[in-house]
Image (tube, rainbow, N blue to C red; front, side):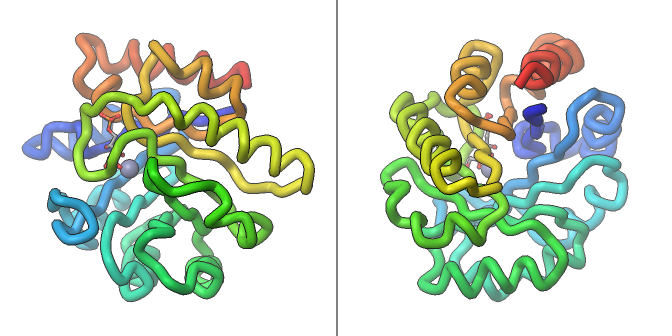
Length: 219
Ligand code: DX5
Ligand code: ZN
C-alpha cells in the first residue's frame, strides 16, 4: 500500500496543535516536516524545537525533509526531535554514502532527496543503501507550486532500476501533488506522496486526505 504524507508547511502555524490533531484523526500514515535554512533554499521554515513539539503530539510516521546545507551536522538532533525518516539533499552533501549510514545508525530510515535538475544517475551507486528516494517535483523552498511533469519519467526510471536490482527503497514524490495527479504518480511506481496545499488548503481537508489515502491504498 502506498502512503500519503501531509506537509505541515501548508498548515496554519498559529494552529499547529490543531493541525497535528487533524493529521492524527485522518487516515494517512505519515507527517511530512520541511526544514528550510534560507541558504540551501530561499525560504526559512523552523528548526528542531518546533519539530520536537510537533512530533511529540503526532501519532504518525515523522518524515523530516532537510533542505539545509551541512545536513550531517543536524542528523542526530532531528532524530532526537522524533524523526522516523530523515531525508537530506544529494546536492547538499559530498559524502552521501557516509551520511546514509550516519542516519541509519540513529535508528531512523535514510532518505536522499533530488532536486528537479538532478539525474537519477547521481545516486545510482547508493540505491542499495538508501531507504527512501525523494524526488522533488517542484524546486524546493515553497509550498503551493506547480508540479514539474518530467518527474514522472524519473519515477519510471527509478522504479525500473528497483525492479531490475531488487532494491527495497521507497519512492517519495514531493511538490505539487494532489488528486489531479496522484494516480499517475502511483501507477509510475511512487510509494509515498507528499501533499501540502492539496490537503491543508482544500475546502474540506479531511475529505481531501481521505480521498488521497483511498487512492494510495490501491497501490
Ligand atoms: C517544498 C517542500 C514540500 C512542500 C509541498 O520545498 O519540500 O514538501 O511543502 O507543498 P505542496 O504540496 O503545496 O506543493
Ligand atoms: Zn518536503
